[in-house]
Image (cartoon, rainbow, N blue to C red; front, side):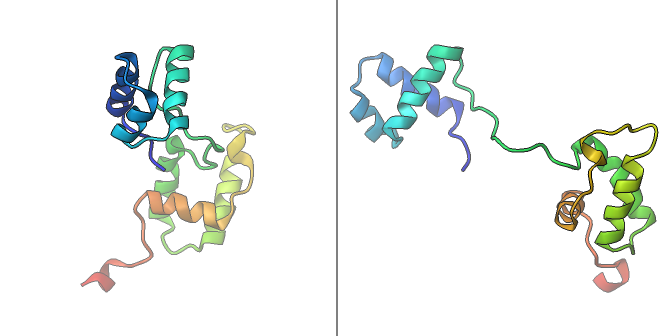
Length: 129
């Protein structure tokens, strides 16, 4: 679910600050009571109403690595997902890379999502005409 805008969060908190009963604020802005209380607590603790980052693991193939993947795809556009995954494992273990998060094998699903983010498709130019 997408986070509510900072503007809405500010209006909700301002309504409470002006003395509007909390129940009425939740009905007026159509937010739940726990959401209202979370905004007030967040403002009290951090001084900000900005949404927090979504939890979860970082991507195995990071944005800064997309350029290398794109170059590989343009040179090997007929390779299978399995071959792309094997290439990823081999190139990430090179001496200049060191062992980091990217040195772990990636699944075909992970590779597919990264390729999809780059806008690559399996269709050839001649098939599009």
